[in-house]
Length: 148
Image (spheres, rainbow, N blue to C red):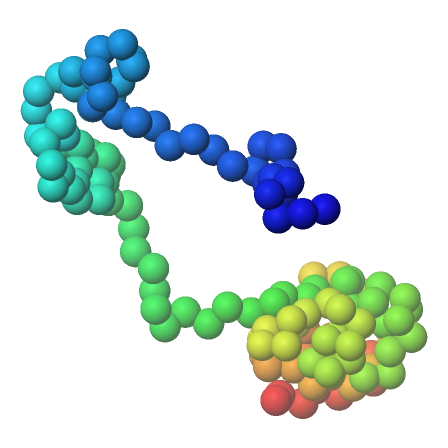
């Protein structure tokens, strides 16, 4: 191998388009820019979302509702789901740490327990929120609830 034998890998280099070099090249006359108008001139820039005078799509679409910036999003578990998870993972404590370790929630998730389903197991709960019915059902089953 010598320096004068070196070539780039096949397909790794591309020829640049030589525009404005006569009609025979296929890129003469208007140099691939179409005919007259703003876009054929030098220094052309268009703003994002500009549609050439047509009403832009973000103004054509209707406004609907709003996002409440103070809303608190909880990861919800019903008592029926909790009973299944306790049996599956053999949990003695239903806490944020055990849920995270078992891959059921993310590190920053807030957990709320709701009352749908049955609860027989004696489990301690360490969660962010509990409904009144769920709290009563857990305490009736012999468990305890601690809000984090």
